Length: 129
Image 1 (cartoon, one colour):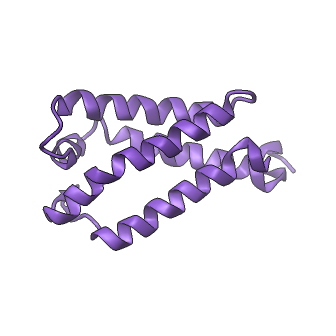
Image 2: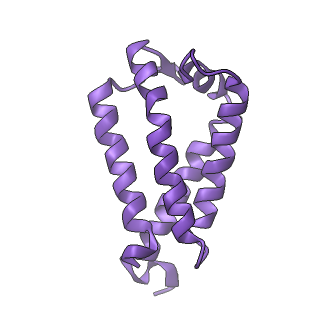
């Protein structure tokens, strides 16, 4: 095959998950930043810092998935981050917020989507490589 990474499902999935997290990280500094700031639950302070640092963590995790011997830490960190960020998704759904002018998913579909993301990260981890 022309691209060795695509010769096996595991490195291909690692690449796909990495691209997904790089795409989501881009929202942390672009036009959607204000939407993400509104998603942070009001009980948390320093919303700017939270949105900025979760973006950095998404980038680090995306790149880390592609590096042998640290891919396990990247996988674990991304899973933990997805779990810890879920309350923001609940807040956004309950507040009927929008991202880029479109309504966010309600809680149950968002939970299912979050579980798909977590499953993808687990399968992209070195446990399955």
